Length: 118
Image (cartoon, rainbow, N blue to C red; front, side):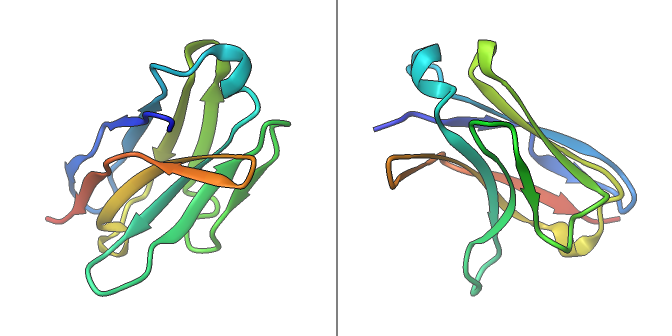
């Protein structure tokens, strides 16, 4: 079981920015670097969807809805992954979850609420 701790959510006005952070405090460095890390989001009544991912080799992948606005990055030395979110719209309002994939097992964080509203 991998512990993941998200932070950085909150309320922001349309057009604003937020930066989410996810830490894996109990995972050693040599294990963390092998994780594929991802950010997902979920709104009530809908399935959780992939927002962005970062593989162990550094490849990134984005949902079409966030391309050009969101950026995923990782700091392996700090065992953290980030999601920089710019030009936010009301459609981005959701609970955002961090995930770590290793060996076919996905571990989830507790989620952090992002609300985009004026």
